[in-house]
Image 1 (cartoon, rainbow, N blue to C red):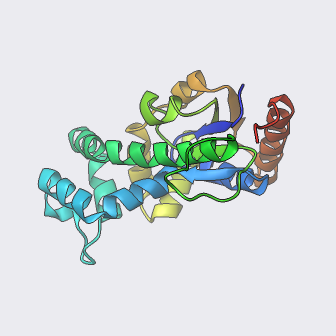
Image 2: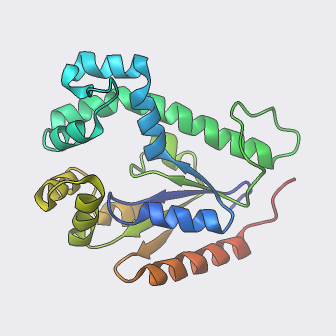
Length: 220
């Protein structure tokens, strides 16, 4: 394992991945949220126009922005439209992720070229919080993969409460995503989130301390 250290944090929607990212931030990690980046990308006027040309004007809400709820309800039940949406947004998201990870690594390495993105003071690790652990933009950018896993029913309950949709609609979203066994296959560290919040926090703390013991001192 080499410094600077980038943790690839992944897991299905509703798994508790964002909660783990928050805990990691509390331990001093810099967090890059791929979902937040995807929202920024979809709201970019040029990208939104491209999406509307491909899928139709219905993707634009009354406020003139990307209608996430309407799009989510439709594309997760239509694999063709989901693939089309992903094909449009993916390259923009990956470019933004690359810039943030490159900036972090530059901040940790003496003599590196100036980073293209302003970041906070160097952190002991960066956590890339991304639901899609694809080779380009995720696996190629990280040093270790942590996966958050939990029962699908619990995931669906969280998605429904978070997004204001039915349990059945939440299950349809999960059916369009990778199963936990695929996340587990890619992971170096597994975090099961079937218990209490305190239990999950303890697991994150233990995994973080173990990682920091194993990691070399950063090159500063």
